[in-house]
Length: 167
Image 1: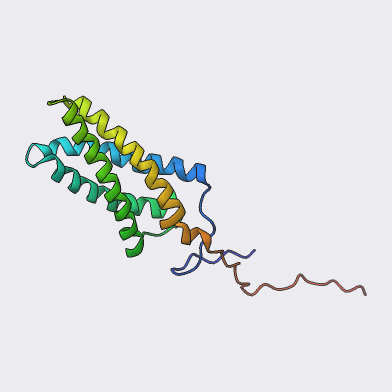
Image 2 (image 1 turned 90 degrees about the vertical axis):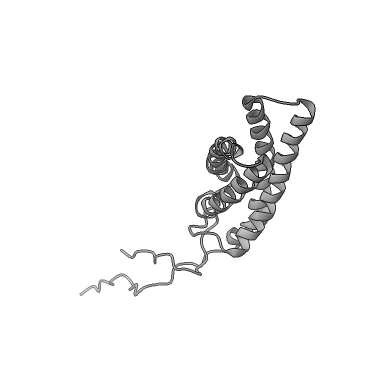
């Protein structure tokens, strides 16, 4: 029996998971971090303005999610590089704008909304922005890893089966 070679850095990896599996993983990782973030923002709001709290949480959660998505969501098997982090940061900036505008509009419509209302608006806007981020990450940021074809394993001393000679 021959074993397949171990994955080496720089070696092409097989195609990542399909769109449904990727989206499920994206929701689990991104949504999980998003829900945790939605609880962290109100804590930070007690010591700083909402926009600053949102920016800090968005930056921290973007770095964490980019790593999770690189390793597990899109099947790269390794962490994200600088290019992926910067591109992901661009999509996170758009997500920050969406969540910020949504909460700003809420405060225009309702002078002092309660925390549950603020949470619902924030999570709704995050869900909308997250769906857009999934499309961008899958089709653009992490597409190059899936687009590469995997090299077939190199033969490692395989011998032809023994030939039996009739006597």
